[in-house]
Length: 256
Image (tube, rainbow, N blue to C red; front, side, top):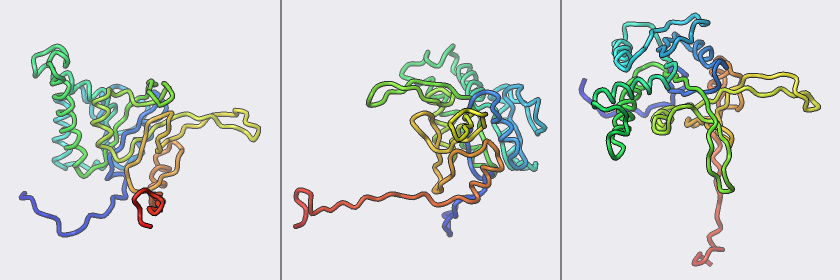
């Protein structure tokens, strides 16, 4: 099909089945369950962790398997509207294994100047971008870990996905929503812990990574419930952009 220039302005997407999302958190918190409630979902299962869910799933044990699944999805002879990669960590490992075999090396670092890692991330980015461009929602699942980050006042712990640095950069640059699933204490009016609840974070803090690059505000936290997330998207409000007006007359060289 020949490329044509647009004749109309595109409208902002509104359906979760049109977005690309990364959700991460501790094991067994309910990330796969959250994703299973998306519309007409297909799980690309890179590990045996879906035995408790009634879902459509296709096993994926290699990078070649993943590419074949992408071809079948692109052909469009199915009813799926959402694709879930469970987990993206395993898929990245498949990509690494495939790449080092193709290059005839033992480890990506065997090629100088970072060429091995660059080849892996380029291949992963190309495939994920291809999948994200298909007319389906894309959800990717990862686990969480605590890392040490440097601040102006020293070092502090921060929660982030278990993906390695360059792979994490590929994924986070691609997604519209970067979500963190967590367990929070429930307190009574005297600040005594009386239980816990599973929540979903959409806004980054100094304690964990997440984000939302859409132009809309989403409440934070939300219950770790897919329908609650969809409802929040439907009721979204435009982000408030703060502006600062500077009186230039007080600046050196400003107007008198």
